[in-house]
Image (cartoon, rainbow, N blue to C red):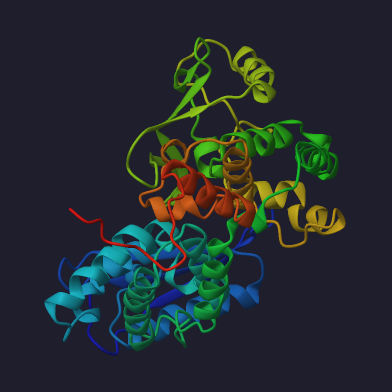
Length: 398
């Protein structure tokens, strides 16, 4: 709602010393349409923070912005101002912009209040889109619509500057592309290295929670994303064939974490090798017979994300100490696919296990061994009988 310019808000600050946030700042105003008396409040730690909040609400009201809009989450604010934010766009541009808003911006940042969206929050969102292997144009379109919505927030006086105008993500994208050209370079070298990493992460975590090690080993041995590991339910595991049917992944969404379909929107089957069957059996016993129980959770039963795993295990510190300073959680997936390729898994089967849409993506995991290439040439020559002439081919007389 847009308020008449110059409307005055009544405000007060209540001190509640028994609360964790002891100062409650509140504003009141009269709805110009319904004539009802409305209010909005927020609890903060200090009287200075309370005064700053009231000042921000008064500034928004002077600009004609409803205080409810000024304090709303990004997804709600975007719905209110989207028509203004996209004015002047051609249809061919509007469609990909709105797709970026719906599929990436809202799931990643939509739950945050507009005033709390920072350059850092946008940087982390873009980094996540790059890690999810979104294309350059997809990221560009998603950022462009976010910039437009946040620019409207600047005009409304909700924020002072546009935090979506981030730079440097193209270099990060190029680095990720370069790495994906040779994903084998991102893999751990051996089973012993994986076990060592898992043990070190457990040892560094609070209360030495063994579940973090289980997540790391399972992700590497199944070449799965951390979100997919978090999404495993009891009914997804077939212990007769030792096959996991990957049906869902846990991802950030408005209001918290949510389960959705896999990245490729298709279920896929992944073998559970002997080295993880005991681990899986132990988890199945621990969670019981409920088919919808999660196989892997945090120490308090919460859902796991790559950020949760990083923070709980002090990931960056541990991998640096072990000499893998550039190793990320997603590289557990690169590790599994590299090991499977080296084990001789045919490329078309590896593609199904990975859930890749393109065969060229899967082929990057094949060993670039020159000897194997020359052997292939020798094999073809032998198959054709190696009938060569020093002066070139000749037409046979008839």
